[in-house]
Image (cartoon, rainbow, N blue to C red; front, top):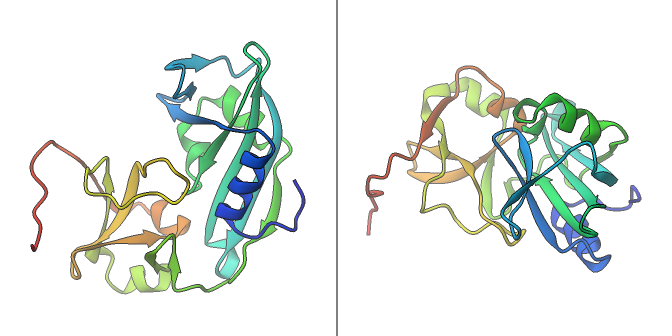
Length: 190
């Protein structure tokens, strides 16, 4: 992958055009092929490209895209880390393989007001009122992800009662409250 790509969606489209049509996820710290419904041995995968797109002051927001080939099946797919959290979620053998040759490039629009259709919240805004924002996990009312999959986590502004994009530095902040979905109905203003 070249440094000419400055947008996650643009990078995903470029990889899909090159045949990376499978969707991989991290599940219980392991690489998981969604179509096969099975775990892939991290020692056998080939990371063909690893791209980190950084934005904001001091790279306070980042997303990672990994183009992966599974030699055992010949399948090629993408692992998209939109929130820059896989380094913490993956088992060390998988994490090391993913980041070994990762290229870092600046993302377009260093201080963009939105990302993927969601208002973007920067660290300075969060610091003014950290209790205003929470990280929701697995809620069924998440907006659609532009990559074609589903979001697994999203920021939520409790004052505006709307989903927001929290920059990476907020997601890593110990003050951020994480709320897993518990199966109750989501309250709506409609």
